[in-house]
Length: 394
Ligand code: AMP
Image (cartoon, rainbow, N blue to C red):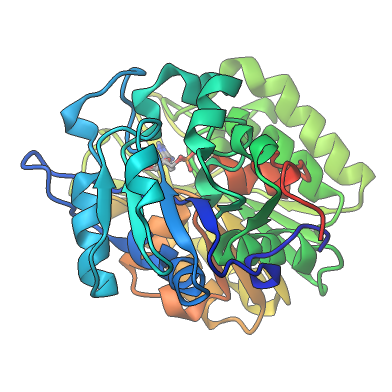
């Protein structure tokens, strides 16, 4: 790994700015409903504080419109962080007008700066904004993986105004699993892709076709492939403008000698609703008009589970069906159980497959759960993330 890590830094007595991901869900009363992201940042925060840093933390929260909006204040996160650290966490009402408060920090003190997206300069990566956000910091640490694929003021801009910039433990681990370990994956390497749309995942599918031995496609995106192959899909979700692309992907898989497994049957119903009549129909028989596929069928489940149990490396992104409803969760749940049970190096990447793995209590049984949506996909596509590329070389 060529980028400087938080482990390589000597921060004693230095002013350090760290970008964290405190984009936590808040309820209407402004209370944090899930503090996972704050807890996840603790190792990097404690490491810097134990090392004697004067630490300023910055983050975005939600989607304010480039101006202060109390709905998106990070103040509750400062309170929660204080509870978790068991020490006082100062708070600055404006991320770029906090010079006095930051100058007053002693070694081992920490301040959380207000939402960076309260300024238009954050998303525009405006140099003036980035310079002001850097303030007196000599060292920058980026530990916000979920936004590392964006060149914003707090992820890329600030690196130009410090003498050293490094990745935190969270980003380091994401790179370890999504890049290093997949450089020469142990065979059989199985990729499982699902979710709503092919269009979101074209690039990652194309990139992973180069490396995978076997590909499994489930979820709604399977219907675009089925339709492209001439099967009836009824009123299932299809991207009509991606039918040619689906055929291109199938051709590419053949060219690369990658086994490309589509569902052979589907669980269908007449309504996008839980608890209504469902049927299992084969792809060959097709889905009648008025019916839609909402999960993979029982024969597909059997095949896909066997593939997962046999694999030595698994990357999984996207559910096999509408797992949020009990009637259509069998595919996703069975796959999640199989991925957890398999002795493969298993990487669950981004979004809804992570939700699924957690829903079935399997979070501890997979090798790695990636925390980024877009950032995870971009890494799997083999792209460099701007928030990582800008860090100092080690
Ligand atoms: P994505 O964000 O692209 O990973 O898509 C995840 C969403 O796709 C989940 O909310 C699923 O409910 C949905 N989904 C999966 N399979 C289907 C399907 N067959 N029909 C409609 N939606 C689906």
